[in-house]
Amino acid sequence: MDKLVKKIINLKEKKNAVILAHFYQKGEIQDIADFVGDSLALAQWASKTKADIIVVCGVHFMGETAKILSPDKKVLIPDLEAGCSLADSCPADDFKKFVEKHPDHTVISYVNTTAAVKTVTDIVVTSTNAKEIVDSLPKDEKIIFGPDKNLGNYINSVTGRNMILWDGACHVHEQFSVEKILELKKEYPNAELIAHPECKNTIIKLADFVGSTSALLKHALSSSKKEFIVATESGILHQMTQKAPDKKFIPAPPNDSTCACNECKYMRLNTLEKLYHCLENESPEIKIEPKIIEKAVKPIQKMLDLSEMLGL
Ligand code: 13P
Ligand code: SF4
Image 1 (cartoon, rainbow, N blue to C red):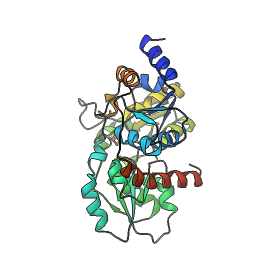
Image 2 (cartoon, helix red, strand yellow; image 1 turned 90 degrees about the vertical axis):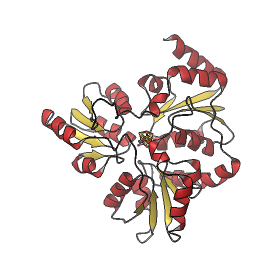
Image 3 (tube, rainbow, N blue to C red; image 1 turned 30 degrees about the vertical axis):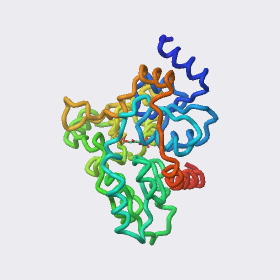
């Protein structure tokens, strides 16, 4: 075993820490983690763990969600600069004004938001439960949805709703090129195109299957197809190739082939070195004011309760 990996495992055991990693993390971080999952699974694990320290190998909003759900625990993140372009596209003050303009609306926010945005939210959702949670609300309920317009449009299309959408997007999922995907489809005529709902609707319309990271993984494993063009952050290919080594997974290309834009630059800030130092120094730590936690926990807990009720 690699020396650094050994040191991380020893420290983790000594400090009764748990390492949670998102599917977009570098392969070596996914391999060392206690749990690897999508945003909903990370929140569910963070709310249940008995560990004293939770290390979130993901981006800042995922660390915040863990802290909000386990405020008495120490929540660490290997690199505090690991943000999210989608969360950044929704400043809390502007979102608050947007919410105030629609007083008779239920506010649904994607988990990819800051804790401050969650304080003015009624229900948080992830891409795993958004459709089911929206479907569970009365048909005539007026809803505003933020911040991802692509996910919002997709949920509107599959639920027949007319939610009012915030105009935000993720820099990774906006970059996929329809032209290059069509070229790939010619090269691999039997491949299925599988896409995350944060992709633009031109990609969604072409896709054979649309789902969250965990849904894409599950589908790729259970499908009888052998080749897949994967339109989401390319970190997910680590689990796909590990779990189905006989299948071929092709990362969907971005518009600019020189930019590696199908990698989330924030997710990739975390490294094994930083993970080791963060466990050793118990820093950087996610800190949130108690009055923000008190408000932000309500829509997140609502999501967890609804997800449990809906069997998600
Ligand atoms: P999932 O909840 O599907 O893992 O998505 C998280 C994310 O950040 C997508 O860009
Ligand atoms: Fe945010 Fe996009 Fe990175 Fe996901 S892939 S964490 S939405 S910037």
